[in-house]
Image (cartoon, rainbow, N blue to C red; front, side, top):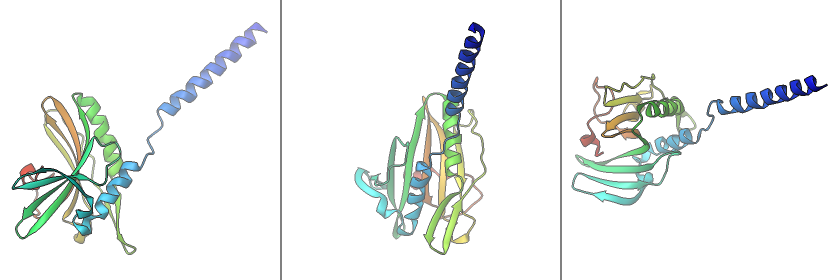
Length: 198
């Protein structure tokens, strides 16, 4: 009788532990970030003007604004406006993580990549696009790591969605960027920060 009680308690403890462990390790199914980025991409035909909030910073080269869309999990989101010839160019960015721990940054980078890969953009009922990219693991010796998502369709070739992880002493920062790229070349990642007003 006593032995069967011990077996019952052991079996019950094992079941509770196993259930708790499996719940802790279930893959994330939260699509809030994915949906927020889809909304940012959706404003591309308006050149991101609908994302502009209050003015944060202004100088002759660039004006920074708060973003009307705050991406899920972001520390801060902003819109930059700069002049390119006869027109204004807008870009959007979200600071997702600031950490001194490289391993922690890698995990977040991979998780965000998974949420962003194949993010949809619907311009109209007949025009649907997906932004995709191959995952490239970041390297600690590279102070700047980047994944550039793009749609295959020619009409979307200028619109870029980028995930980058950079080291700014003493921290690693992870950012999501959405911008219009004027020129095409063989360069991986985004153009210089200066060119986009970051």
